[in-house]
Amino acid sequence: MRDLRNMARYLSPCRRELAAAVALLFLECALELVIPLLMSRIIDEGVASGDVAFIWLQGGKMALCAVLALAAGLLYARFAARAAYRFGANLRQAEYEKIQSFDFASLDRFSAPSLVTRMTTDVTVMQNAVNGGLRPLVRSPVMLVMGIGLSFLMNAKLALVFLICAPILGVILALIVHKVGPLYGRQQRAMDHLNSRIQEGLTGIRAIKAFVRGEYEEEQFQQVSQELSDVSRDTFRSAMLNLPFFQLVMYTSVVLILWFGGRLIMAGEMQVGELTGFLSYVLQVMNSLMMISNVFLMLTRSLTSARRIGEILDASSGLASPENGVTEVPDGQVDFDQVSFRYQAGAGKDALRDVDLHIRAGETVGILGGTGSAKSTLVQLIPRLYDATQGCVRVGGRDVREYDLNALRDAVGIVLQKNVLFSGTIRDNLKWGDPEADDEKLWAACRAACADEFLEHFPQGLDTDLGQGGVNLSGGQKQRLCIARTLLKNPKVLIFDDFTSAVDTATEGKIRRALATRRDVTKLIIAQRLTSVMEADKIVILEDGQVHAVGTHEQLLAQDPIYQEIYRSQMKGEELDGPDL
Image (tube, helix red, strand yellow):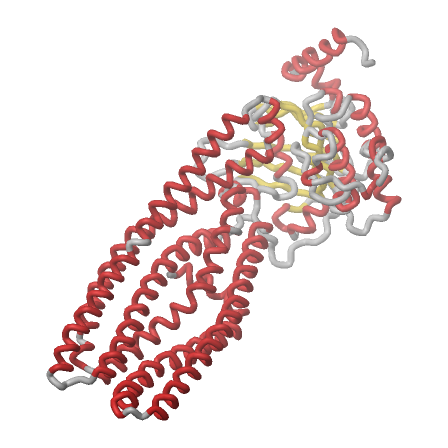
């Protein structure tokens, strides 16, 4: 229930709509409860005495109550819907804002499909709980209390039936909720699995077609779809047991009331109209109990979704800007002082161990190493995508934890291994680097990244629409646009993580020459090609998360066996392949 209470604060902006909806519900209930009293008077007084005028008068009052109750119900539906959809929008916005504040460690805890499910399906469950659950949640207790009260006033002996039925219904409801609760959790996890399979299938559709794996993917999708179907069937089969059991108890109560009520009428202790009105209250009370049971089932499912949403909203990010954080990075000097890092506290070993590395402002540094040597991990500590487990990372002479996060990351530009572009035009994507950049500045960055070579062939130039994720571009074209976007930030530190893997050597050379003119920017280049870092001021070789060697190309070629092996394998290959055409 704590999770549901936490969700309630996102309902506070909708309190006016909720208050209006609740007031209208009370009005509707009061009007409906008056109708059986009027009906009993028609039978006992009007019909018994043959007073047609009285019958028409009471019938008119019943019709008026019914019309007013209908109007109240329609207005309630409007206010409840407004509150529910606003509540859903507030939840989705809060989740999305929270996810944007996550550090990489927090993102590692939640898979992308699970986050999508929590922002869509789980929010919809909560939204429906307000829209569809508010009515029975308010109406049922009101109708129950008032119905039982009026029933006891009408005939206390017959009303004792409720004292027998209520415990039976309570036991049935408790058993059903106990069984259904865990099933709702399984259902939402099955939805995560389905979303994961859909996401992989759509993002990897080209690879699936290239390897002719369509049938295999269909089988995999069928498995997760069947998993969701099976869990949903088990869940709703158990939840639907509520209806037949409650109907059994309700109609048994009606039969008993008719039996005992008939005997009371025959004994002269009760009138026919009184029994008819009493039965109306019985049906209202029983329907109220049934709605209350449905509310409990809805709350059980809502609790599961509220817990999943709460896991996002309550997740604490290990990275946060300090109070009065430094907002200016003076230069691009980077220092690693005995830095160690592991992704999880329980990990068996550190990804980085005892890294001691000092880079002066404006230097160009190449970083080499085998797969898994933690090259990308090293540079991700600079903009505080992760925090060092031990030691200290400094930028501009200050610990990165002293900086305001936005200021630090604005001062560090990074081109990741995976080139990410977004839906929209090329101009929209480039302006991620500088929202105020004019065409001259945009084209200058594109020329530095050699992106102008293909942009000039596009009829719409910078206004060319990329489609989702840049599907209209080749890998090399996307890579060059990502480089241009990063250059537009004018950062103090530029990090290139294998940034020319998708371009040819001639284009790579042009990009390196353009970058060399930016002497006031510290450049860290992670590369697989030796030619990408041979002209760097220093080259760092990582091996198994440790700094193996640091030096210039000439120093390492003369002294370091690992660098010598890399040089022989790559440069000999180029000699055997012959000159570039």
